[in-house]
Image 1 (cartoon, protein in one colour):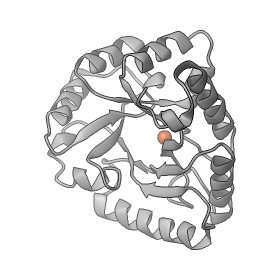
Image 2 (cartoon, protein in one colour; image 1 turned 45 degrees about the vertical axis):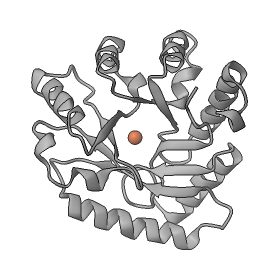
Image 3 (cartoon, protein in one colour; image 1 turned 45 degrees about the horizontal axis):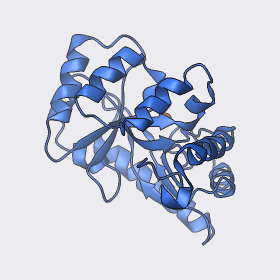
Image 4 (tube, helix red, strand yellow; image 1 turned 90 degrees about the vertical axis):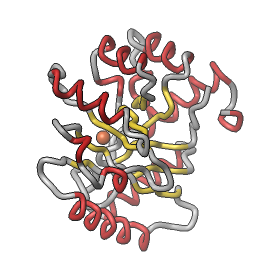
Amino acid sequence: MKIDLKKDYHAHILPGCDHGSDSVRTSLGQLELAKSAGIETICATPHFYPNNESVKSFLERRARTFEELREAAADDDPVVLLGAEVLICDGMERLTDLTKLCLEGTNELLLEMPFYEWPSNIWDTVFELNDIDELQIVIAHADRYPVKDIEILIKEGIPLQLNAVSLMNVFKRGKYLSWIDGGYVSYLGSDIHGLGEEYRYFEKCAHLLERRYGKRENA
Ligand SMILES: [Fe+2]
């Protein structure tokens, strides 16, 4: 298994950057919960909606809110990397600044698909994005979409991120584990918003995967 169980690849923890955290105090609470769950790295992935905002304004807000968190965080808090959860939109492959939305230090773009049936132009866009050499799209919370659609993306070689909570569902767990077994899932995310139960699920999920594949150190 290639998943790093000490890394949360999808989290909404920057204070006031999106609806994930309303204050520095909440964000510090989120870091504390992550630390208790054994997480060493958190990818901060605030929502980016290309139809509502420019990349420039998003990046400015992300930098400002990250700075607020960085000043308040303790030295032993998890390392925070900057990324984005980017909602797909028609023609998005033509957006010139896409690489600026990739996870810090990588060419990976965390892509959110719509929660309604994907129309043909959205399918076209996801395949166009997959063809851009400078980018590697990663499908955010693949567990939240119809299995038949995700399995088409798997055939195209597009890597997936699963929310940890998905493995708590005993009816669907088998399918997600088969994706992990197949090497199609590259990352696990909490997708934490506020001070919910997400990191409790993350820890449970990490233990479940450790029992199946071996200790986190070996992940
Ligand atoms: Fe999210």
